[in-house]
Image (cartoon, rainbow, N blue to C red):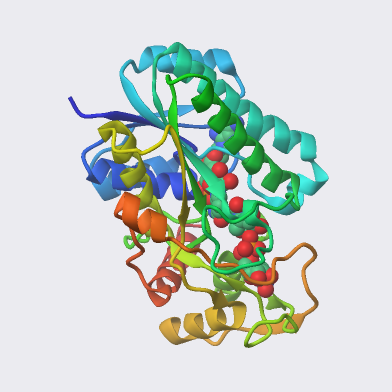
Length: 342
Ligand code: NAD
Ligand code: WQD
């Protein structure tokens, strides 16, 4: 029998790309999503890409009874990949309780139900946000963590701790936390991609929405940072590369090749890219001149960060394959498709 994987947040941005990669590797998948920040038709698109539409259960993971019923309905789940969370940094500052409740309670509920139903393995979506502004670059998994600058970021740190403590307390649960750097782009089919609600907070969706005429101009938040061109630096990776790392993490846990009960891996390209370099590359690969303006710094922004992904390269046998140009082109193809639909 093929392994069955429960994917929470399975119609979300990274979840949907991961479901595609899992199905293509022969895994059975069941998705759960509240559709708080995604659409059910994304699941049909997964079916169009892979030829197999996974079952999608629509409910909120904070409802523990419904989660219990899900585990009863699908016996024999091998592992859970837990993507579901609220992720808007700005909103989390305004509504901390909403973020703490959703992100932490859903994680506790899943761990409790995993224990109850004897599901041993979890892969958790963490974030480079836990590193804050590191003193030394690139950041390794051993780099010191900084106090979170937002309730959102704090939920990632707290959930990592909850998961780690759970693996320490009993050997019933083994887990891997994946610390993502900046995922961008869309599946090469342009059938699934990022679906920002309202005005995007993130750079690449703002760029594609500006290029298509939904936004007047992109504001570049600062050119007076201590970086070669003065704009901030991040490690941007293609979402399909990121998705593949989850398959590797699940295979590692199920195959028993994990070295500890709780492991952490950075997922990035290992290369820092500035905001202005992103704009230049976008213009080059799409042939579109982007309207942008340098404005003041955005409060809370990190100046520069990029990953040391050596551990993931070595232990997961994973590295990024798509180029920055590929990723930006795919984001553009997805944006065009999305607008055609609307
Ligand atoms: P997303 O919002 O596109 O997907 C998350 C999905 O989870 C959504 O479909 C949402 O409806 C669902 N969800 C949220 N709370 C739920 C709940 N209580 N019950 C059921 N479903 C719920 O976000 P994404 O970009 O795909 O991010 C996935 C994960 O990766 C999140 O945990 C996020 O914090 C983390 N992460 C994202 C990034 C990024 O830049 N996108 C970077 C680092 C980490
Ligand atoms: C990237 C760069 C901005 C928008 C966020 C979360 C973090 C993590 C990753 C989940 C920065 C600049 C942006 C714009 C701009 N997510 N920018 N104009 O800041 O790395 O982090 O996503 O865990 O927690 O905070 O990503 O895409 O918002 O910004 O100039 O309109 O683009 O200043 O330098 P960031 P981002």
